Amino acid sequence: MTSTFTSSTAPPLLLLLLLLASPYRAPQPAIHPASHPSSQPSSQHQLASQHERARLASDRAIERSSAAAIERASDRGRRANRASYRASELGASERQRASSESIRSELSINLRASTTIERASYSDRGAIESIYLASIYYQSIYLSIYLSIYLSIYISIYLSIHPSLSLSLSISSLSRNINLIKRATNVTVFH
Image 1 (cartoon, helix red, strand yellow):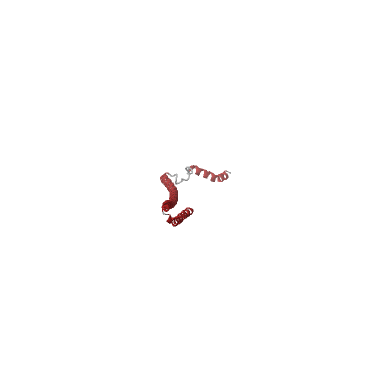
Image 2 (tube, helix red, strand yellow; image 1 turned 135 degrees about the vertical axis):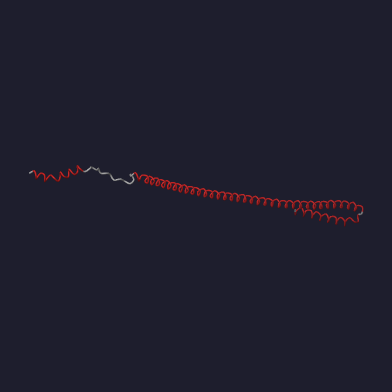
């Protein structure tokens, strides 16, 4: 019975004794390269370089966006300047056209007024000349009438002294007076 117990329990006891005799080594965790002391400087350098690259990339993006914004703003400013310049040129041309048209209209009005004044002066001059000629003509007629009356009186006195010439001179004087009266009446009716 003893031999049976020994032979059946010997292997487990042997294993237990062997385990107790061997020194215990606790399982060590797996060492990550980043947490290893020797790899910490290189990982920090990589992180710093990554941060630097990210910062440079963000700076470049900011610079590009700001440059694009400045360029767009300058384009808008140039377009606004061109539009204002065109508007100013258009306004100047419109003002110049309006001033030239007003000057042209004033010149045409002045020309028409001067033409009207010149025609009026010509008509006035013609009227004055016609009045002057008519006055001379009437004066000549009046003078001839006065002379005929004076001559008729003189002839009548002379004929009273010399009766033989009475009839012929009276007839000639009468015909001359009739002609003068006809001329005077014709000129008066004509004017």
